[in-house]
Image (cartoon, rainbow, N blue to C red; front, side, top):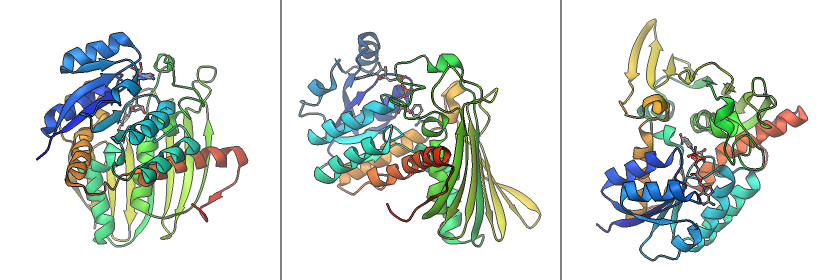
Length: 340
Ligand SMILES: NC(=O)c1ccc[n+]([C@@H]2O[C@H](COP(=O)([O-])OP(=O)(O)OC[C@H]3O[C@@H](n4cnc5c(N)ncnc54)[C@H](O)[C@@H]3O)[C@@H](O)[C@H]2O)c1
């Protein structure tokens, strides 16, 4: 099978998770990394034995590079993705797709125009064994109809976390806890629940007032076309990074995800359906092992010429939910999904 040539833009916190996954793949060769911070970029290039570029546009001129991983701040996802697709490169961008819907739409348009290449959006938690099992329970109907769900994210982010060129500001991050940390859980809720009928939500800055201009806390209520409902709460104002909790209540049982452990409660008994997969991410273990699963799946689709399902339109869904909670919080109104 042909091996793909790969490059990564943005050698910051998440880059190593991508670079280690690419190295383990056996399907691709890392050709280059890009970072405007020359020290970070050259260090990473040296560590992984590849070329370094300060300007991604120079890297895009290379014909031996097929796939670009976009691992920069949110506001850079759209311009980098649009340029890479126009240069005939496949793109796998980190979540959120972009810092707002207008930027994300430029990516959707570019992907629709350049049909010889594919756009994928990282939502690695869909690949967690527990998430796959929960989706299977919904699709198979083994526990009856899905009635309601809850998603709870109680994490900690210090003022120092926001001391970067892009975090904590509407223009560059596009929001706070919702668009950055809790978007994974919102994405799971919409993936599990299917077509959305309406959402109402609210945001506030409870602990980091004066430090960030975006929200550190949010809550929402969702109604799905199936009749199922969901409640959602997220904050970066907790004292620690607590395990994320997702509960799915069915007619004949209840699935409860706590961190990476999935419990089934049914007929008065409790069973463990899925346990954590060990990883070496230390205190960032909540990032999970699933980046590797998603990156492999994307490359296999590209190599086999099959359309990758977690594409632009699919990645846009969670971003839309996030921005609708912002809009609902501003207006005090419920947002109804009558149009796309
Ligand atoms: N999927 C997950 O679980 C997960 C976890 C963490 C971060 N992320 C996402 O990964 C992305 C990056 O986050 P991070 O925490 O690694 O950010 P970061 O700030 O640590 O790293 C960003 C890097 O991009 C570089 N950069 C800035 N401008 C650039 C430019 N014009 N060209 C090239 N490089 C440039 C910076 O110098 C920095 O090294 C974000 O979208 C974030 O939401 C995802």
